[in-house]
Image (tube, rainbow over all chains, first blue to last red; front, side, top):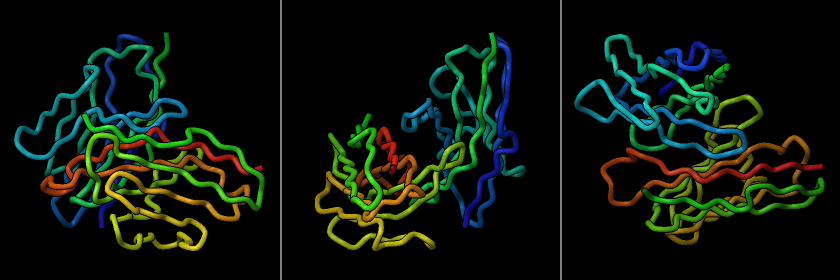
Amino acid sequence: AQSVTQLDSQVPVFEEAPVELRCNYSSSVSVYLFWYVQYPNQGLQLLLKYLSGSTLVKGINGFEAEFNKSQTSFHLRKPSVHISDTAEYFCAVTHGQNFVFGPGTRLSVLP
Amino acid sequence: GAVVSQHPSRVICKSGTSVKIECRSLDFQATTMFWYRQFPKQSLMLMATSNEGSKATYEQGVEKDKFLINHASLTLSTLTVTSAHPEDSSFYICSASVSGLLLNTEAFFGQGTRLTVV
């Protein structure tokens, strides 16, 4: 079984500041890792994913994430956030079937 | 990228009635579709997995007689909430995996359906 932990339920940050959203996972098998963003009353949009290869993954909207196998982490980063980045962010894992989602982190970008 | 269309986006129904939610893969064939439920300010929880032409597999604690899932074709899966009650009010999201890919390395999500039972 897999599980995903997102330690921060809410992250407020000022516009143009850097941000890191933390994600840790637990799994007895190899998994693939994802970050999704959800805007209010909308579905999920894929930000980025790690399947194999380079542990630093670049996604859309300037986001990137680094897979750290020893620490079982997949933290999401952005060097400079915008107001439009305000949303809910979900870390998820799959071993090839359904996805297991973390509880989500609410990123609020303040002017 | 692949598109999954979910309909309706919002629905309000009276307690005791049934509501059907459709999930369509518009430009690919989806052998497997997943239905998730999201309570306010919470994460998505898998309800069931549906494979085309066979019965859905429900997660523990999900009432199969209440949440009827039909996956009659490779492009359409439906979730019917029967005899809805206010506690069924939630955000329901479907996702579809692309057949032929090596493992389910990406899921394409619908826009979600906000169900409110009054």
